[in-house]
Length: 350
Ligand code: NAD
Ligand code: IPM
Ligand code: MN
Image (cartoon, rainbow, N blue to C red; front, side):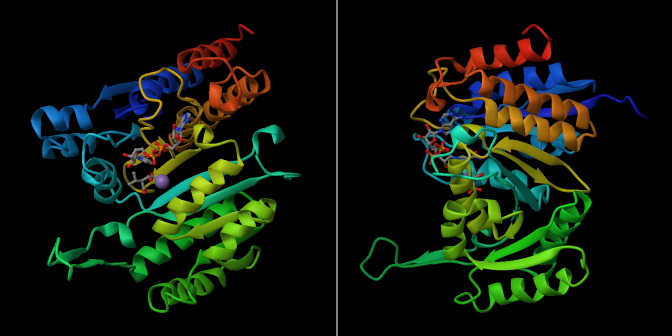
């Protein structure tokens, strides 16, 4: 059925997540011709602190019935690091097998970058999203003693590595991109990243129209600052992708503009900003909602509404051009006022 309503699970989560999700979802609804049916899931620190519940099975099961998840952020200074992040966010990515984390780096206006003489930046990062140091394998011996031993294991599987590399190549081909670059640390991680090397070059040989490149992660970090325009499509590991995409956000105007999609091509995908719950600015109505708004555009594209996605991007470009932005971008508007400016643009009232 063509016009079946799309069911969206809203998980605002913690901190500024609770501020930006309602704003961004209004923008998404205004931009799309799809009928969206939203349901709120109260997961996060408040619930955890009040009831001890993190992510009850019934809610995991209920989510199976949705077309997409729109998430704010998890993490709260009152809760030990890792509990909410692993118990909710990573659980979503892992249990729904959202193996492809798409993180676009796009410089919407030249004046947003802290780099001197930056050329156009338009890079798509494909971060592997279900393996690596993130799986939580490991343990500790003799905790709290002088002989303490801590282990945290880096796990990569042939299937896991192949599917993200293939996904990146397929995307690059379908979008008419030029080059796919693998970023790893194969000179040190001679087991895990040798697997990445072998699989990358094997899959690469099937894509004759695309250029292929390889960078070691340390050099890649340097290159992202000195010549970001030389990158096109990047595929990398979970851990390196996490770090490099915050760096990528910084060169494109900051975390307030960086969006992300956690994709399971056959299942439930989730859209969120790259940033976290930002406790330092939470509750002040000054968080930039544009990262979440752009994640909303990625969600619409995923749901098949390319036109709605383009309209959102246009609206974002317009507020950036007219400096209708939050303080960290040099503007004077609150989060909600940025949302109102986007809605006014979409309604043709400007
Ligand atoms: P953060 O991304 O929350 O904040 C880093 C810095 O960027 C802060 O100074 C913050 O004020 C600023 N910032 C972030 N988003 C912004 C926005 N939209 N507008 C304006 N400024 C913004 O990272 P952190 O401080 O390292 O982590 C805070 C908490 O968030 C931790 O608990 C962490 O685990 C969690 N976290 C969650 C996610 C997620 O849910 N996807 C991502 C990253 C961090
Ligand atoms: C991100 C975050 C998460 C990650 C944390 C909160 C688990 O930093 O989405 O980039 O490391 O993936
Ligand atoms: Mn991160």
